[in-house]
Structures are given as C-alpha cells and as structure tokens.
Image 1: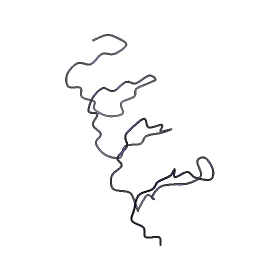
Image 2: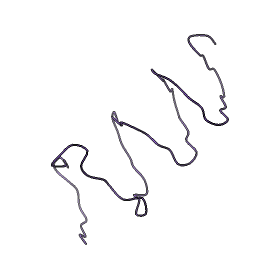
Image 3: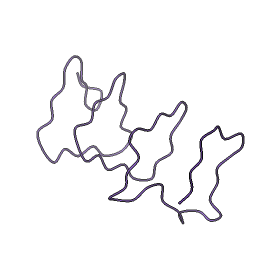
Image 4: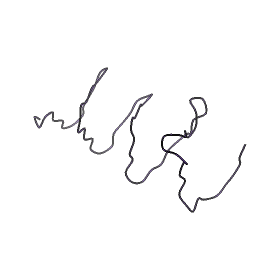
Length: 79
C-alpha cells in the first residue's frame, strides 16, 4: 500500500498508452473533478446521468430505454 497526502506538481503519465487503470471494478474512486476538455474513448454510465448546459452529439445517438427532454430539443436541425 502507498499512503500519500499532498499535491502533485508534475504530470501523471503511464509508461504505455492504454496500459493502466485508475481504480478497479470493486475499488472505485468516489468523485472526479475535471476542468478542461476530456478525451474519453468510451463512456459507460452505470446510473442516471445529467447534463447541465448543452449536449452536442456529432455521431449516432442511440437510446436503449426511455429518453426525456426538458426545454428545447432539435433533431437534424428540426425543432
């Protein structure tokens, strides 16, 4: 086990691309706070997801369950 408290003053970079995980399926991090742009290959949301602000989908959007929209929504530019 590694126990550390402090701030990281440099980059945290793996030795190889797509070779390391952060947490496990049974030992998960609680919250993730990010300021900037996230580049995520695949996003799998296990629970309810909310979007505060605007959501743009530039490829295919598939809903496998019930979808609800509050406010203005347009599809292929059609309101």
